[in-house]
Image 1 (cartoon, rainbow, N blue to C red):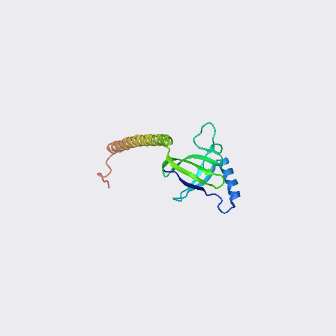
Image 2 (cartoon, one colour; image 1 turned 45 degrees about the vertical axis):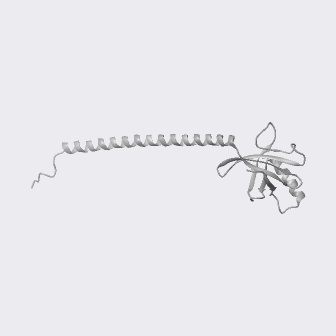
Length: 163
C-alpha cells in the first residue's frame, strides 16, 4: 500500500508526556499499537530490537527523534509487513503495509506440508478401513459357511413327528 499517516493509539486518555514514555517503553519491550488515520485500521505490532539485521525490528538509532518499526504478520490470510516511522514527540508518522513475499512462501510451504500430512493420514485411515472391512467380510463369510455346514450335518428337526 501507499505510505499513509499513522498514529500511536495507546493510552489516549493519558497526558502526552506519559503517552510518549509509555510508547517508548512498549517499543523497547517489542510491541506497540498504531492506526492508519485515513482508514482507521488499528494494528497491534510485535517486533524485536534491531540487531544483526533481523526483519522485524524497532530502531531508535536510524533517525533522530523518530523510531523506525518493521513488523511481519498475517492479515486476513495474507502475509504482510508493516514498515514505518513514528515521531517520538508527536506520536504520529508514516507507515505502510507491504506484501511479504518471503514469509508468504514460507507459510505456503508450511500449509502444503500440513495438507500432505493430512492427506497421508486420510490415506492411512482409508487403508485401515479397507483392511477392517475385508477382515469383517471374511469373518462373516466364515461364520455363514460354518452355519451352513452345521445345518447340513444336523438332523432335520421339522420333518418328523412322533406320537
